[in-house]
Amino acid sequence: MIKIAPSILSADFARLAESVKKVEGAGAPYLHIDVMDGHFVPNITIGPPVIAALRRYTDMVFDVHLMVAAPERYLADFIAAGANILTVHTEACVHLHRTLAAIREQGIRAGVALNPGTPPQAVEYVLDLVDLVLVMTVNPGLGGQRFIPEMLKKIAYLRGILNSKGIKAEIEVDGGINPETAPAVIEAGADVLVAGSAVFLSENPAEGLKRLLEPREIAGGDFNNQPPTSDD
Ligand code: DX5
Ligand code: ZN
Image (cartoon, rainbow, N blue to C red; front, side, top):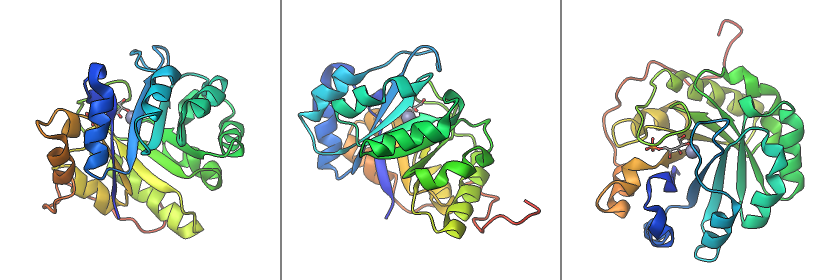
C-alpha cells in the first residue's frame, strides 16, 4: 500500500492547522515536515515550536525531514516537539551510524536521506538501523522543482538491497512528485511519496492527493529492482 506524505512546505504557513486537517481528512498517513537551517540548505523554514503547536491538532505520523547541519544537536528537541520519524541527511552527519542509533534509542523511527549526488552505497552499512530511506529526487531546499529521472535507478537499487537483506525499512521519495512522475517511482520500488506542491498548490488538496495514486502510463523508467549483482 503506497503512502502519501504531504509536505507542508507548500502549504499556507499562516493556516497550517487548517491545511493539516485537510490532508488528514483525505487519509494521508504521514505529514512531511521540512526543517531547513540556512546552512545545510540555503533556506530557513520551521523548527520545534511550530511542530509542537501542530502536534495538538492531529494524530498523523510526523515525518520530520531535517535538512540541518550536524542534526545530532537537535534530536531531543524534535522528539519532544512530537516527531514520530526523524530523518537526517547522510551528507550532514559525520557519525551517521551513531546518530541513527541515537534516534532509535529515544524510541522513535529513524530515517536516512540521500541527496541526488550521493550514491546509494553511502547508506548500505546503516540500513539495519533505519525505518525509512529518503531518496531525494531534487536537490533539497525548495519546493516545486523538477524531478530528476536518474534517481529511479537509485530507488530500484535500494529496493533490491533491502529486499535481499530482508530489511523492512520503507523507501520514501521527495521532490517533484506529481501524477506524471509518481507511477515510475512506485514501479521502481518506493513505498512513501512526499508531495508538496502537487497537494497544497492544488485548489483542492484532497483531490491533489488522490490524483497521485491514479494509475497512469509510466514516463521513463529504464531500471529494474532486482538485487544488485557484482557487476552493478
Ligand atoms: C525539498 C523538500 C521537499 C519539498 C517537496 O527540499 O524536502 O519535501 O516540500 O516539494 P515538491 O513536492 O513541490 O517538489
Ligand atoms: Zn522533504
